[in-house]
Length: 310
Image (cartoon, rainbow, N blue to C red; front, side, top):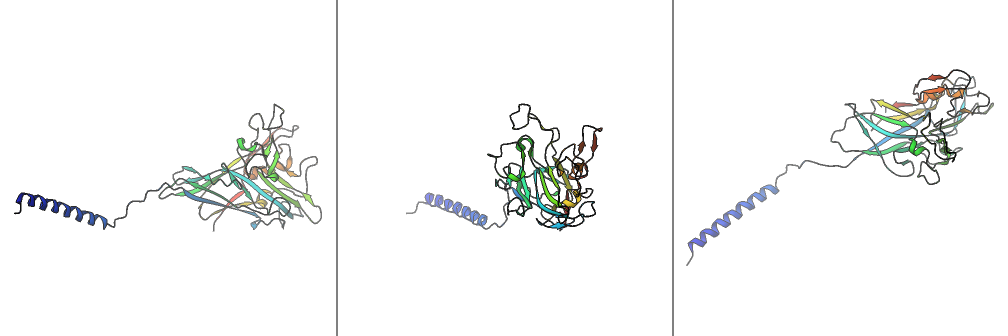
């Protein structure tokens, strides 16, 4: 005989299971996409180029119309520079720091070396024309510009090159332990067929004092660090290029003449007349002090980097 009480209980359980299964089936067929949540950083690739009078730089090439001399040809044999502290600008004027990819070849810490020479006289065959890094994830980032700082920070400029990671151990960019490294190296020969006048631009810190006389890092920050932040608005980081044009830096310089008893060209000396027309065009406030005449300050002009649109 069927127990009606037990039958009713079983029927109720079966109904409940059927309803649950029906809900599960309906849920599994729901095609509404789940919201995407990610913390994956966004990859950034900042592109650079080198030029002379808007012509692509090719190591070993002789360019015309460089400087103010009548014989204004200039054969270039080296072009490298360091940048650090890369930041992207947003429409609301806020800034986002770029974390550089640590390859210990072209980039280490927050420093990168741009290298456009290919070993035509100095350096190595390998070149580098980009800075690679990441920024924190944003669903709709609105980047409108970029800032780069030319040179090296004090805490990295004076470290021991024998133990430093690349690119801080590049021999051609070393200067002296106390002074640090060359932030910019531009080498060339003016009027290479006749006068063969060496004319270099080596930018680095000056007024670096080692009071302990140990021959290593300076005891305090250098008087003239000679680093400068350059910011560019209306810059599309995915398409635009920052171009360094040597001719713009040398536009007011007579490359066939060099003041006697001074370095060939400008090597950042505050008593070197050739630096008066050059360092401001690298974006620096330059103080000229020859120890005889009154000190003169020349304001920055920043003719070094320009934005190239595709």
